[in-house]
Image 1 (cartoon, helix red, strand yellow):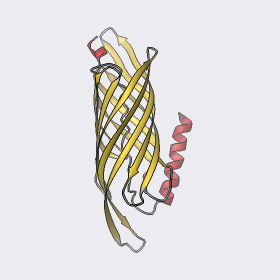
Image 2: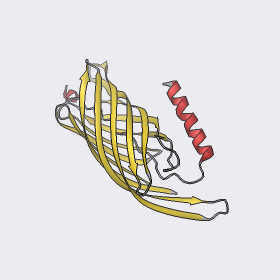
Image 3: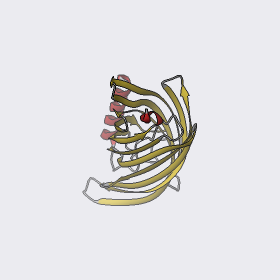
Image 4: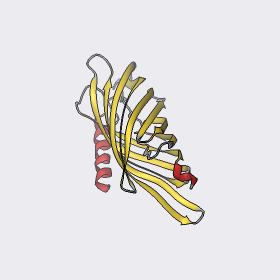
Amino acid sequence: MRLFIKACCLVLISSLLSQCKTPDYFPHRVNAPMLNNQGDLNIEASVGSGGLDFQGAVSPVKNLGLVFNYSTINGSHSHSVFEGGIGYYRSIGTKGLFELYGGYGMGDVRSTSTDLQGNSSTIKMDFSRIFIQPAIGLLVTKETNPERKIRGNSYFATRLSYLDFGSDQQVLFIEPVIGARMGLKSIQFNTQFGVSLPTVSGKIDNFPILVSFGLTYSFRKSNKE
């Protein structure tokens, strides 16, 4: 994990040193819900490098999950994005979990940049995104006393995001992240850290780091126990 974090920091530093304009693409938080039973539900709000994220996930039937994402940010870069997806999950032993989600989303972005002479320009674009994201995780339940249990999960996910800004601006991004949720029963603190790497350079300017912190409402069948 330390090696992964160091690699992320190197990517960020090298990108900031070479950045000439406001990035067109700020990746939002990866929605890796770690559902493991029919009826499980997540509702999450977080803030980070990709702006303000609202995400949800629900399992209407066993081994099937639905995910929803909305992200927004305002500033020299502004965007709003809405996505929906569907996926499969399966337990690995008593504590492990594998999941695979895919989906589609649309959004718009507005970027303002300033040249060396101080002249600013604003570009507004619409875009779409197709994503596929496998993840593997570890479910955590620790009893601190007979009436209190610490619940949560940790996970590693890799989102493959195909962005289409129109014209000749289509790029596949590889976005590995590590994340965790931890708290008491239904309310948990969440955090996530990762990188966003384009497979082709020069077509879409992107911010290379994903960092977020927030809160999760998590309903699980085990919460009733």
